[in-house]
Length: 407
Length: 148
Image 1 (cartoon, chains in turn cyan, blue):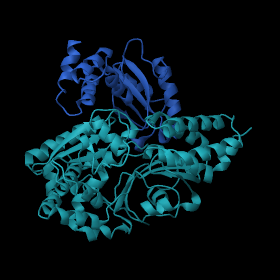
Image 2 (tube, chains in turn orange, purple):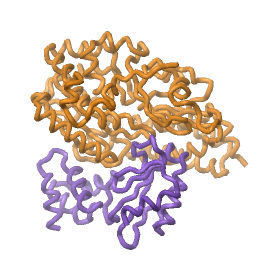
Image 3 (cartoon, each protein chain N blue to C red):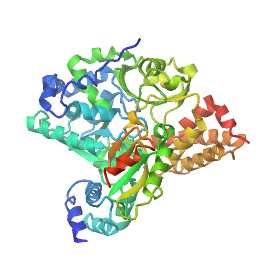
Image 4 (cartoon, one colour):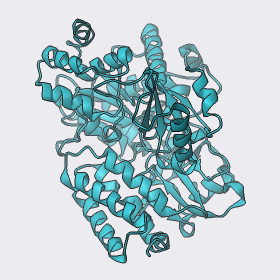
């Protein structure tokens, strides 16, 4: 049986997360110390060589992203930690922030040194006020110890908008505006918060940084899948025996995640589908379960790794019922800035609702396919581009659930 | 309105302070009073439409009254298949109001929400952001008793 590998969760249950001395005794802040002994360029080369790719869903090489900000001269630069974890079924960033907040602060401080920034923000979702309190305590302790040097970190709280997980919408929100994504380019590493070079990385990305420096890029690059090395924190929900979290190397297969770690399907039922990466992820049938969870393997089967949420459905589940709920979600969460998303998510939910209530026809399925394809290309940001994915993949793999609704 | 000016004014010099000011208002009132939008527009020197636009963009902010305890029920897919609809019915029955409404005594408001990140224990509700998981129609009244 496959085994968990706890890198991010190495301190889980072992230290008092709100006592910085515990973190330091466990080796904390050695990575930052090592980073500061390196030149900025060597540091970024090391992070780049580790192969660490963004854990928020886009999978961009973190070291390379940092170099874009480093190479942009400016009187002020910012480091932003995206803690707006909003993908339904995901709570891995909360786990990291609640159980090892200093690892996130340390990762941010390393990034600050690398790009030449003295100011960081953590944008934490409004659903987690109790996490904000813990982060503030952790920041106070780090400041009192002086471990962050001249790098300042401030927590800002979101207010219940899924789109703010998109980096430019998140930036707009920190600036005090409606959280609407910006037109790109320019990208945030060049023109970000208040127009300054800004690195936005996910909580999990930053939390990986300290150990990469402590143990070296080669160590990290040797774990899991070659093109997306390291571990991934996954959260299991739905009809699975163990609704829990796991941290596994990225070459673990979906089948291992569900059946070895998840304990299989609850209630002795059979597997039907799994949606990975949150509510914007594709639906995966039984025949594709031997795919590894890494970014590229998932992309190759038309799915995503995304946030690492694993939503399992048993044989009794009606895909159209689930898709009806998901399309309603996107209609509600579309920010309304671009018309393909504003109108598309609305019409998509309308059609699915029609089919669900028995008023649909085969022509609706063709329309859904067409609309979904257009949205995935024409929408301004990742929200609208990914929104059709659950619809398109269920039409592909579970079409009979739709046709069974026709009268 | 004097109160509002004091609360909002504390964030005037904070970069991007408008949203921070709205959070402060909500900590005080659980909602954003209509007049506070005027105060925010004046203090941050922005059009009232913009102050209103920001307040209404985010689902955790509400312009206009809400109860003392905001009960939010997650309706995202994992909570949905775990039986969130039955929890909604039980809450509506227990409180005698529909989703989106506030009880006559001003104590409870029922709202839908999307994922609150406590998916190890679906279905989930939050009461003034404190999460309660593994809900069933049967354990609703015990939880509400804490707040009555």
